[in-house]
Image (tube, rainbow, N blue to C red):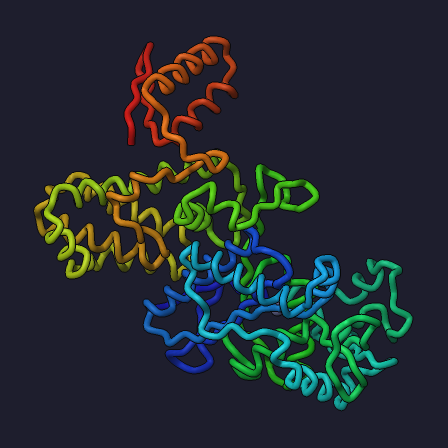
Length: 475
Ligand SMILES: [Zn+2]
């Protein structure tokens, strides 16, 4: 099967050709473990987790590496603020990262290297770059000579001269050129350090990924992935270092996921809309976050909002609704047999995989799931047709990392817990809210009317507006 991926390096969708037939080696930039993970981290992790499933389904043997950055300025600053050691800070946040990823159903990578375990490899690449004239030492720090690498800018499409004029005056006077970046930083007072040929110091951020990927995947490998915010300078610098040191192409395909906005604003701590994964999973069923994320193709930006999540919940409920209808109309034993020994419907499976093989078009793949849902709803549950549709739905869901919860259980827990509350509404409370909503609509106060509808939906109350009245039922 042909897999097409959009390659940032060439700015086009290309047919994937592995370096070694049947194998694919993937490196993705992991998190800097100074704090809890946020929604942006979730997105990359979910998308590239699904990409790995797709490669496996297409018969590839996958090696997937995702690192932890456990030494850099942010780590040092935070450990000082919190008055704990850097290794304690790293340990705490690596654990938090792993728990968050598990809660979102993200499979652990095959290898999860920590930057501080690769100091000798980092030093070795840096030394090689100095020997080849691509880097120079000044007062215990080592800088990369950007102008020496003619292809600098090939990933981001940035031109060296434009960069030069756009540069801010911060300029480190130790550098030959303001564009140069640090491979090795001489130790400053009260900073952790490792011995090196240039004296005590620590690695720069970019070189860490070059060292870890080389160690585990070799000098050239297939796919390098990460968020689009990492294209420049991080990935550009990784390419420069690695290609100059190794004299070989670095990664063949560069994949970048789009950014997430929250309620139409850029997610940022200062705006107070910084969504950590652990806060989100308290408010929304994790599988819903996953489904919502995959409802947009990975390169597009996503607008995350409570309303968008509610809409997404309706979609996921529809699929689970069909699964539940099937499961509650057959015996437990029949359900188990269907789940374990059904037959995959080849045409649907192929259609799904084709969508995913087209630059991971997950929304189109989800459309196949909706189509199966519709069919399952019209079929007699005790029939081999229904059994196979049921099985195929679950199989395809598995590839996306959804539909992991028994359908009957899905509707027993709220998918959305407003303000983290799981309060069940009584019939009287529902009637009161509906009365308020009617009034709001009569007053043309649409915002309030929508808010009430959302609140009811979040409490798993299904509304149906009919002429003059609204009927409701519990989902
Ligand atoms: Zn990286």
